[in-house]
Image (cartoon, rainbow, N blue to C red; front, side, top):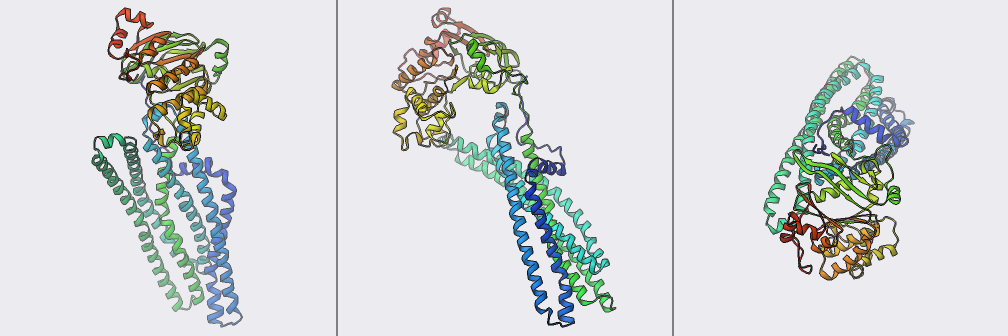
Length: 607
């Protein structure tokens, strides 16, 4: 069975907007409920202050302009100032508190996303381009944060303000208040329709943002090929086309958002016109006093801003929930490589029985009808060194991937120290192995940190011993900051041989009972190779070692050679035995393996 896993940019949205928001609140926002409650109290105070400001127009007009009371000339302005200061303080407090909640919530979401990412199955990581993953981390998170800090915060504040202002309007004239409220259902219906269009456009722009991130990432990763083959114009055209598609989607979303405010303004204008018409008729007949009308109109006009803000909230909510759906889709992807409930500690088994390895009728395929391994069977005794040889695509690298449980076998089994590796903990399995790949990867960190990755917490003396054993100490100390020199992206500030020696030092520091070496000396010059090979020979003593071999010296030194072809074991034996057979190994020896160990590396084959 071939492995296929969903991508991080899963576009299915089984949950409603309400369900997505409810999950966000339950799983991430609720832990900050004290801050949210305090912010809500501040919002209530601010909304009440807004309503009181509108109501104060009534006594201001009546007592100062109609009754002409001099004693009120300072009292009412002072009351207005006090109310506005309270409102300002409450607004500052709730904005700060909810911004903190929003930032913390997004940080928690991103930590969860990263935790899922680093623990994901290798197949899923291979299926999803890194550019799309980065886009989800940054762009989707920003949209959710904007919804929390600006959208939801403003919506709650504006809704509370509307409640208090509506209370003032109903206090002054209930019939006029009803006229003012008639417009709200009309605004809500129109905004919901616009919001659906905005959400659709937002989803499309998110997908295109992921595509653009992929293009940028690929252009940077392949910058040497881009320049060598003069692909700058092609890359620019590809990026330009993606940018244009993204802009069209963003403009379409902006068109929907832009329509929300004019729609609410027009309908609000209708409501205000009706209010003035009815209030004027009542005023002419003596049924409504000027101070009551001005207080009512003050509340209505102050309510205009919350209505306008709320009119754009649904569009912002649509953007946020679309992003939230993508984030939760990434978080919810289940791993297929997991510990069983009764998983054993492989370290204890190796200490008791030695690091033996057995492949028994192991089968695996990356794609349907294309087996990478088929009924592979072989044994490796504790302390034995096995060389894996074969043409490209024979399955050599797949054997390493299955041993490390990057994938699980689909047929047969793999045992280490007598335990099926599917029944031991992943941590103990991988702790038991040290891997050195043909193309070493270094982190954009210090030399010290890169070597210490082999054994986190190792002291400086142990790191230096590993570097010396890997013939790396001399060139490391010649770097500008020695062991504290940062190596840049993928360690590209070093030569290939230097990168390989640091990778070997990392494996030496790990001091694991099983070594997986993908021709670890292939990138070294002759002098460095001799030094490193001597160190590797010492390290390999009493350790079980599998080597993907390209050089004759590696093959000859191995206890046994396993020749793979098309995912199956073709031959097994020593160098002399296999040459005498005159089979595939003899052919590979004549065409691929070097007879002169001092010559440049042979054409390297990938398993």
